[in-house]
Amino acid sequence: MYFFKRLTLAFFALGFSAISAVALDDADRANLDQSLAAYRTALETADFASVVAAIPPGVIDLISAQANLSPETIRKSVTAQMTTIMASATIESFVMDTHTMTDGTTPSYVAYAFLPTTTNLSIDEGPIQTVQTLTLAVEIDDTWYLMRIEQPQHYDFFRAAYPEFVEIPLPE
Image (cartoon, rainbow, N blue to C red):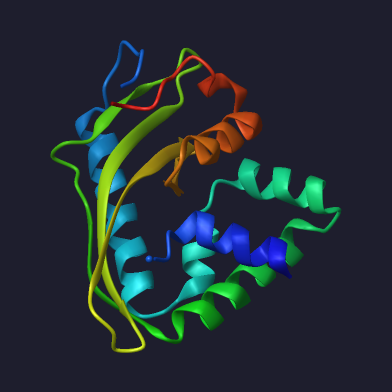
């Protein structure tokens, strides 16, 4: 159970530039904006199954292999942990900044964006806490997936699932 708690916190950040030649085109940006809006709605409505569904599938598969559990079990467990953890939290605001994001494509033409993300939340009606992180958005099979990058190790884990990102550094 500790594994899932750590995993949930890593993805959600409770506490709540790339070497590429091609930036996102207008269609990619519009699709990304739609995905970000859906994600924000899922957070605001506590639809944690949708939040977990936004995690890149390769990341879920890697966790599944390491934990020797099915991807569906991983998704259900992370969703349950988020539900429990977030029961005492109130998200005051959540912004993924598309105006200052770093975007591009990998050498194998996978579109991505690093979005500065600010989450303001309170826990058990305590003071509002501000958490600033990056959100990595990655387009896989015409679907945008999102992963919170709070520490370089989170990006290293993502890279283990998606080796085509090895040459793409975190933005500074």
